[in-house]
Image (tube, rainbow, N blue to C red; front, side):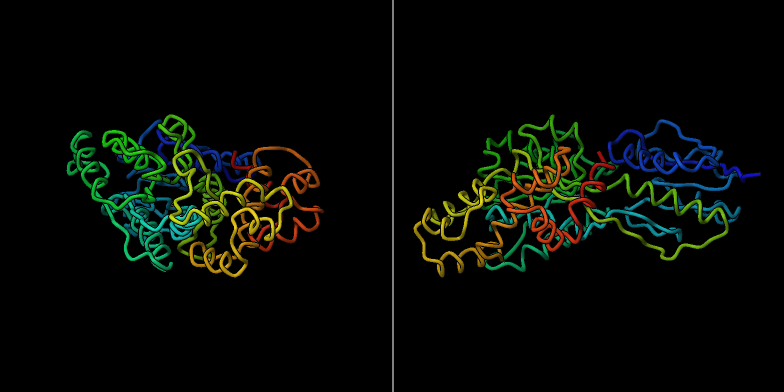
Length: 388
């Protein structure tokens, strides 16, 4: 008879991230029917129920592990997969987002818009926020003419956290001191909302003076924000799926191959909060604007030169200095970005997507797409569709 596993899911249902983790677990359970699952409505701050310390089940997937729960699970031999990414190590296999890649992706997004002034807004004593901050600062400071990155942190929640009004007042004062235009990376979408609200209070223009990007691509926060918030798309559904797969392996007597496993982000969802080019040189601004507008219309570098009135050598030198890419690479960058959007948002066939992105043949788009993303267009579409 098939072994029936009793499993507790300690995952918050109050956030889109937590619900997407659960979607990944549900995807796993559609082909594995030997779990009996306990899940209750909860938020991230809520502690595990007292009865769980004496529970005699088989497995736990947890985003809310405490030292007491960890000790009880180890004493009873209950298998645990850890999804808590706040920094504390309880000695269980951990699956989380690749926060370094998240930080680099946010940096590349703002750099591609020509920003030279940068800031990070995060939380104290949160491992995931710290990792994103470190990677973001490292990436922007590696670029020419970027000397520093301002940082604002405060306590996320709990007894030490400020009231909403006190927090927003402090954010306004911080934002006023930043050189403009500035690109601000917020550790998550909730933090992004805080910054957008503070900008409105200080009467800063978004994105012209302050461009803001968050993380999680929370559909409600992204659309309810004013203006709509750009966001790095992480992949919690894949994390949930992998967690369920690993827990089954552990409950069956197997071992984790690695104690820490990370899942890369899917890309950036660009909305109005970063839809701008921060360029001081009007000729270069014109070149980049032309590329953004016409890259998918089969343009050449010669077309760009003619539009902006610059020589090839000057255009090449300035774009490499600003973006780290040649004019031709920037054209390809915009084409692939458009291809990603079409692969995710539509069911168009590959030949039509190739045409809409300015490629003569779908085979050539396949080659360029794989070179730029390490995935084929088909692989990218399947992965993205699975996370809608």
